[in-house]
Structure formats: structure tokens, C-alpha cells
Length: 501
Ligand SMILES: [Zn+2]
Image (cartoon, rainbow, N blue to C red; front, side, top):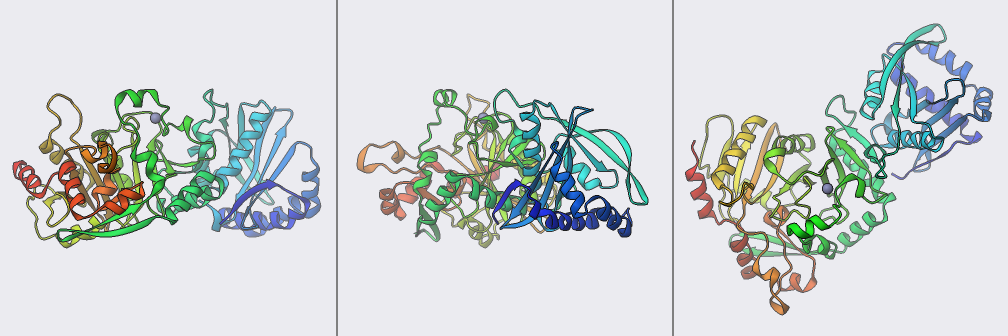
């Protein structure tokens, strides 16, 4: 779906009437009789009345088109006596709500306020239209008074509110990047659908992202048998930057953090996720759908501080997407900025492989979570399953305490984590790690293998950004890489045996 917004034209009047009528009947008919809505449309928005509005120099109208069809209408009006800019109309056809079109029209109105040196944008919303009220509140509006509003013979309370639109001194403020917001309450669409709309829109607007997906389209894969399991290798030159990112503290301190909202590319937009995170499209995708969910603030990558959000995100996205976590020294390309990734479910070989080895539950701690090891994978892994978030989180913390950290630091144990949510239950696959990058990564010349394993690689999809590594990869090399960077099954068993339960 290609979305564009443009100033309205006289030829749009019939489309505007259609949008008003359809959105009013859907949103207002519960508290205003249809005949009054019809009468109001015919008095206030007749073609000649629209023409008068159109000619008013203090009015600006915008149309949003989806694939050439008008699906949204917004209108601003400057009230000279109050010196206020009002968003007088913002209507999106019901079938196109939740796709980010409203956010885009709202942003255009905010831009207009800024361009006119106004610090506020004002809006009026019917009090009974709770859904719309929440939509504005999520985007920073505060409602400050209530006034009667008359539609033909019906009078309803109208809430009047405003938001401050002062531009942030650091450039783009977060609000101006919002494609949509997800708070988990009264959402018109599941998060996975909102994210799909974001991706579709961003692919049309952000050339670097379109290029990233074009590179992925040309990516080649190989299946390689490692013991009884099968590992996939993907040649993906788009990942070179991420695989070779310097992650030493000095380099991290000196680079501009690419996940901080103020440093994102100008074309990048995101979904505000539960107030604290920004749901973004990953410009170097490994999968046909690949997101990064990063904290709004520059906080260090840490699982213990973000575990509940990580589990909530898996639930909000499930069952179509899985959520990944890379420890700060285990493949996270921004160890200094808290973030997760989300990718399609069932594309990582480990997901099917773990299902197949379900038989070996090693430990059943009190509560509703199970912890068990795996059998026959390319490396050791710990599986945690449960139907209550608190139990699952407690099981993860138990495993983390069993793994310990480096003796001389308060850092979390090295690990990667893959979480899925299906049928009311979480399933986490945790890979305890020994090392960030294999020795072959640092070798000079022919012996070098540019592989920097993160959760995706641990999950059985090894990413090679260089073709020579893709071609050189074989069973023995893969075996060596995993033996170096990950626990084997025996080491996992020892950890599990050490846990209280
Ligand atoms: Zn940052």
C-alpha cells in the first residue's frame, strides 16, 4: 500500500464528504442519531459550503491517499482572535485506521504550527468518542475543557485540548517520528499488524531500507549438517557493518549511537511501544521482516532491567514473530543502547529442533515454569517454558544466577535469548555463551572467518557477510565456532543440575 499526503483540491469535495460520512457513522452513531449526522453533513459540508471553507485563507486541508484512493482528510484552521491553530478535522476511513495515516496527517498539522511560530496545536474531540480521545492523549495532547457541540438536534460534550509542539533543540523530537503508538489498551490492530504497516510504509519512504531488503532478496543460503542437526548459512553482504562493528568500550564511547532517537536517519519512523520503546525497521535485514525495538533513552543493554518488557513484547507480537535479545558482549551491535529484535517465527532452525527434543525435562522448579536442556543441537541451550510472566521471569533469573557472571564484574552472564509466545505460553531458548567472537574472526588472511554470532546465529542461521566465508563454511568449521563461543550440552547439564528446584 502506497500512502501519500497532499493538499486538498476542489475535485476532492465528494471524497471528503464520503470520508466524513463513513467515519461519522462508525464513530458517532452510538450517541448521535444518523438522521442528525446526515442533517449536519448536508448543512455544514454541502459542496458549496466546502467551497467556502476551501476559500478561507486561514484553512488548510490535506488528503491522504492509499494507492491513489482518498482515505483520509485533515483540516487545520487558524483562529485569529484566540491566536490558536486548531486541527479542525482528522478523519480516516475505518478500514485504514491504525496504519499510521492519522499520525502522518497530525505531524503535518504540527509542522504547520511550527512554521507559524505557534507553540501549540489545538483539537476538539467528542467526549463519547473515547477511542479518539485516547489516540490524541497517546500523542501528547492534554484535554483542558469541555464545551457543548451541536450536530443538528443533538448536543454532545466536546473535549478541547492541545499539545505543545515546540521543536526539540536536538532536531527531530521523538513525537515527530511516530508512525503509530501501541500502549496495549484498546488497540485497533495487533502489534504485528501495526509493525507490518510500518515496514510497508518505510520501504516506500526510506531508500536505505528498500536497499537493505533488495540485498536480502539476493542473499544465498546453504544447509549444512552438524551432527544430527541442520544449520543454515546465509550469505548477506548487508550485514558487514553489523558483523564488523567495533564493540570495545573506547570505540563505543567515541561513536554516535545509531539507536538514539535523535540520531536516526531522517526518513526513519517508529511505533511508540508501551511509552518507553521505539519499534523500528532494521535497515540491514536478515529476514523478510526484521525489526529493532530500542529504548527511547540511551541505557546500556541489560536483560535483568528489561526482562519483563522482553516477555511482554513476545506476548504482544506472538505467535507470528519471535523476539531476540543479544547480551552486550554476545552479538549486540549497540551494547550501550538497550534494544531487542523481532523476526518471523519458525524461520530459525532451533525452533523446530527444540520442539523435537521436548522429552528431556531436566528440572521442574516450583511454580508454573519448566526448565530443560536440549539434545542434538549444534550447541547447548536451555529452554524455559511457562504460562505466567512472573514465573517465566523468575526462571530466567534463576538460570542467570546459575550461569554467574565474570568473577570480577557485575555484568550479566553472557547469553543470547529467543522468545516466542503461543497459546498462552512463553517459550524461551537461552544460549549461554563463552565468548563473543571466535578466534577465526580475528585471524589474518586466509584463515579468517567473519562470523560474529548473535541470537540468530545461535538459533542455527549463521550469517556470513563475505562470500568467501559463505563458501568455506563446512560442518567442521561450524562445529569449531560453536564449541568456542557457546556451552556444549554437557556444560548446560552441569548448570541445570546446580540449580535449586
Ligand atoms: Zn543510544
